[in-house]
Image 1 (tube, helix red, strand yellow):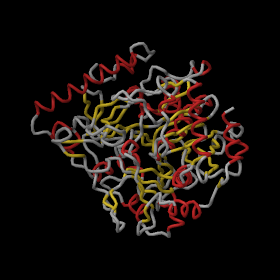
Image 2 (tube, rainbow, N blue to C red; image 1 turned 180 degrees about the horizontal axis):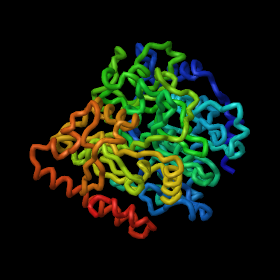
Image 3 (cartoon, one colour; image 1 turned 180 degrees about the vertical axis):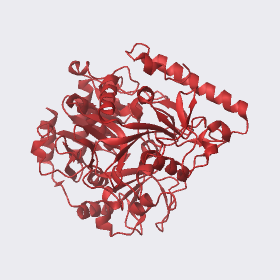
Image 4 (cartoon, rainbow, N blue to C red; image 1 turned 90 degrees about the horizontal axis):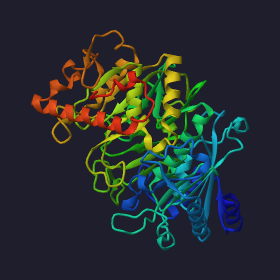
Length: 546
């Protein structure tokens, strides 16, 4: 029924523009003043304050009896909405779009492997949103008819700057702290393969909706979806980088010495790794050309306006076109979207072999975790289940200071199924392909946030290179008994002093107190989240604080 009403709206709309070329859609965005043209040819745009990041409290899944056995409704991120309310929102959004001067339609796919590429049609009134889908979603492959999703396409409706008529949804949508009804929704209907972004102008809302859909569908096809970036060396050895937003996935995987496969989400099947997307959606705050040259060149290299397509979102921009990526007054979460091909060393095909190395990234604001540790199989499963990091400012609305968070699989908001779907698949694939795993802390050293300093990215890169190239396979290790981690005593190119975090604190008592407090948080959360779960005792024993 929803698709029929959408097709009716498109059939009766006075101007529907389908699959425009990049130059055409960019020109519409410029002419409609959806973005300011910068001297380099990129477009700079700004959203309302409530759209400077994801809105997890407004991100919902339509609840059907048929999905009960799959979706983990105990997860705080899996919020439900009833089918009737979703249908009403869908019709309202279509009515809004029908009244617009023109509507843009793009047909793309999610996934670089033609065997499971998912067709997605995006319908929106905003040219910049259409351009974003061209950047982030992949072109339809010639062999799309071979995809297991060939006859199961997904439809995404995006009305970014229109707000919900809340008078129609009293008691149906969430109440804000001030007692008013929310006028924004990001909704997923997995049964009918529909997505709706209504009232959120944050580009990431559309992207993450589609990737969440893939993360739901793939495990049912025996394919493991991972919230990770991926790259490979000259011998085709693949490394994966798992981590929440702000932990360094995009930055650390963009390496001039390694070919980038993808930036944010991948699938792992019997053939290896495949990128979900066609571009990158990177954080722009504090971007320095010396430390992140690949991303900087991708964003700020001069290109003609019509062929550029780079979208800079919520970054301080002055009337003369100067961009100040160090100014956080608008948001800590300034972003940039660009095609993968703008990086100098990228694998456009978007596929790779089975990973030889997996890196778990965490940004520990407590300053007590080692900058790098080696994980055995049980430790890997524990950290995969816990997904610890300190949630950084700006990645979600309302976050201004780092907060301790546990997000299983380093992507809990985007993993709708029950935990066993993902954990079991990872365990099977690790054993089958003998993948080594390291935990890397990209957070603080010498003290917590506000006292210590962020671990220098050049040091992190040196540790990553050593791990991926096998230089840490035969060095001596010391066991960190509190966190159950194996910490290398030496690493090429890295001062050995910083490998053990207690050495970097001037106040040893303060270190002990902070470390013990974090270990207790681990233990308490594990008991809360997995007390009734069938977790292997050997995995349970690797939890910090136990």
